[in-house]
Amino acid sequence: LLFGIVFALIARTLFIFLGVALINSFAWIFYVFGAILLITAGHLLKPNSHDQDEADNIAIRVARKFLRTSEHYDGDKLFTVENGKRVLTPMLLVMAAIGGTDVLFALDSIPAIFGLTQNAYVVFTATAFSLMGLRQLFFLLDGLLDLLIYLSYGLAAILAFIGVKLVLHALHENTLPFINGGHHVEVFEITTGLSLGVIIGVLAATIVASLVSPAGKAQTAINNARRHAESYLDLEYTADPAERERIYTNLLTEQQAIEAMDKKYRDKVKDVDAIREKVREAHRRHDEYLRTAG
Image 1 (spheres, rainbow, N blue to C red):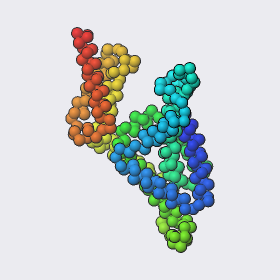
Image 2 (image 1 turned 60 degrees about the vertical axis):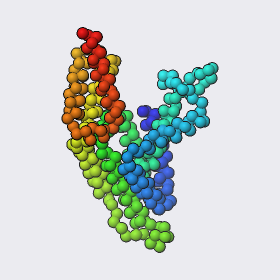
Image 3 (image 1 turned 180 degrees about the horizontal axis):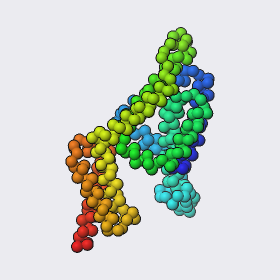
Image 4 (image 1 turned 120 degrees about the horizontal axis):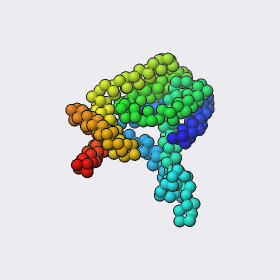
């Protein structure tokens, strides 16, 4: 995680300086930034988007092609000895996947922040502080993201809004000869205050809709069941019989709540089949424990 944050900070700093140079040299670059955000917004609305997997696969394929790597980890080491030769471990591939993913998403995030301000200092400090806080917030956000089932729709709306703002700004600063003869176009420009209001409003609506909707409640209940099942199966977490029985009781309670929900909401939950298998495994372990204890 630390490597990912450091790499992201370096990569995004380069993107920021490149963006500032392009903005200062070419007013039409706002058309490009706006188009990138509008395309990304449309992609977020498509089901089963695999941007992250694609970025991971490309980065891993490139690393495997040009670097000699082993098939097995050696702790957290980057190098190991295999058949008498010094080779790189798959830990490097993990770092390559992290780097490739961040470069892909930087193509969206950097134009988005330029849609709010063109001050390079503000852009850099906002990016740096957000990344520095990511390490402390990672595990909290990792759990919350599963609950926000409508987050992709909210992000799509925000990216589309900023994309439109950039296009309007490009029209206002237009220098392209085939648009209005190279003169600026009188259009409504969205202010920074209005932009922040829209972003906060969309995020708030997304969070509320995710948490209070039947589908959101189903996601929460199933995530709780998964957490209890994993805790019960993890003997390193606790081997105390009383504690394990308490966890199993909580699992049964969550399962009863899930069964009472509408099936169409249960089946829409992310990774529902894998979660069901973990719950079944917890039941099998509990039955084995009762037979052994008896």
